[in-house]
Amino acid sequence: TMRLDEIKDEDMLEGVKTRFFREAESTGRLSHPNIVTIYDAGEEGHLVYIAMEVLQGTTLKEWSHTPNLMPIDKLIPTLATVADAMDYAHRQGIVHCDIKPANIMLTTDHVVKIMDFGIATMASSVRTKTESVLGTPTYMSPEQIAGKKVDGRSDVYSLGIVMFELLTGQQPFKADNLS
Image 1 (cartoon, rainbow, N blue to C red):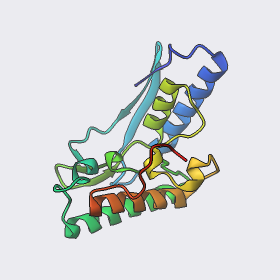
Image 2 (cartoon, rainbow, N blue to C red; image 1 turned 180 degrees about the horizontal axis):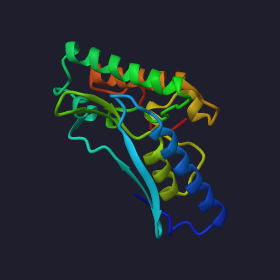
Image 3 (cartoon, rainbow, N blue to C red; image 1 turned 30 degrees about the horizontal axis):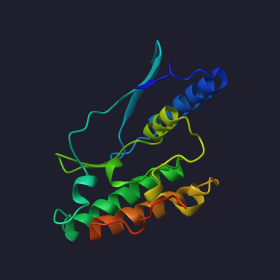
C-alpha cells in the first residue's frame, strides 16, 4: 500500500497515481516463474494498493555479509536465474531500476523471485518528496544516478554490483555522499 493523503499538490498527486498504476499494470503483464506475480491494483480512500503473490523465504540480503555468504555453486545458478528473468522483463520493455539483494528472494521451495518493479522505490520517493533519482544509489548505474534515460543495461550493471557483494560480503563503492 501507499498513502496518498500526505500529498497536498494536486498535480503531483495525479502524477503519482498515474505512475503507480502504470508500474502495477506493466509489472502485472509479466508472466515469468522468477518474477513475483501481481494480481490486482486499486485505490481505496487515501490508499493505493497492489495485491501480489505471497512469498515465503529469504532475500539475498541475508547472504550478503560474511560469514554468511552463499556458496558459489549455489550463487552462480541463482544469479543466472535472475539474469534470465531480467532478460524476459527487458524483452517486454520493462526495466526494473532497483535490482539489489533485498529485491531478490529465494523462496522456501528454492525458487528465485525478483520483486519490487519500481513500486517500492516510488513509494519511498513520495515519502521523501523527491522525484529526481529513484532507486538505491549503491546499486545504480552511472546513467541512472545522473538521471538519464536507462534501459536493460542499467539492470545488468546493478546485477554486477549484487554479484560483487554476494561474492565478497561488501559493496564495491562506498562513500559519504552520492557523487
